[in-house]
Length: 527
Image (cartoon, rainbow, N blue to C red; front, top):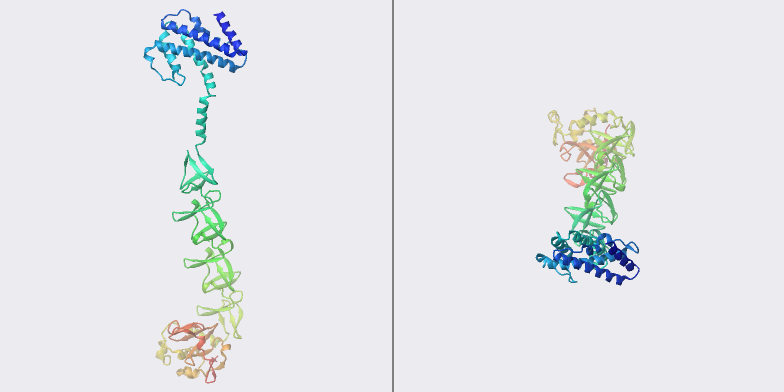
């Protein structure tokens, strides 16, 4: 055996020194001859020379150490392949039950030759040559990896490459194509659906294109997908000279309030933020200024007027505001009353040019001086005038107008007056008698006291209207008290000169003041 092993070693040396084809032929022939002899013995169930099989044992086949490892591998693979081929051929004729096993490969060899050899050899020679058959099988297993390595340079390499190509061409995730962005899940393109990617919601349209700089409407709401494709959540959007807000879930805020940074904002129809404009709801008026900030507890000036917006942004209408030691009044439409008289609670008040209530100071009207007390109520300083006015106010709303009334104790007790009897009774309470006495009328009263021009009319004066057909008691600031079916009470009541007559909507009380009657001034100062 030692000698045979040396011969094998020498043949390997020749192979590595360049005599490749000659050595391979010799080696292959020796291997085939040895295997053929072995299989013949196996067929006869007799083993006469096991040493011929040992020529290709794993130990001897790997003895060579000179040259490259690749050369040794190829040589071993050639020997193993020849041995294997011969064994398969002989084993197939011995095993009758496996004669038809497997199919033919393109080179005519059984497709499952390795498995066939293992089974046939094991069954046929188990008792006769167990050592030899095992060694042959081990040689085949030993060179299997090397054969596979070389084969990868051929058809197997192509198969692997095709598999790899197929794997790499399966689209998954975000993909850019033709200037658009798409999303794939295991090769399937998402269309007309939403997808959260990297924590941000995105929308893929019916054609699969990811929406960018795009408004989406559904479920009664509007959404905006930004230039990077992400949905705008809890953020502002500026365009077309307007500001919009998209809240939680990306819903655009329409007709609603937004609070942040200590301020309140309103987004109206179409989601447009209200800037420098008024908003009305719940019977109140609000103002949103620069940057859309709601005006809270602050003043607003426009159209020559001043307005105040209090807590919650509500505009103060027909109400008082106190600050800096002063009181202010904001009337109808929220306009602050400046340099004007105000009548309420039966009293006359005056608000200065800065809107502050006049208190403990003189107030002037038509060249006439009044006095504003500590509570702001205005008086003339004339006790007779103030007494007459106080008495007149006690009759407000007590009884309807009664023509001819107020001239007897019974009608007076019943609060039944007409216009002339009413002003006569009022001044009688101050000890002032009007021309005509108990039976005074407008035609007698116009001669009472001293006449003055309408432009100089003062608190406490009588003034005649409708060509001396009606008379009233002037309170100041354009307000007067009278008894008339055209008053707010249809009896004793208070009107302003600029109020319209109910029966004549195109006329005001000021329009029908009688300047003179028969050469007599229509305004009479009786106290």
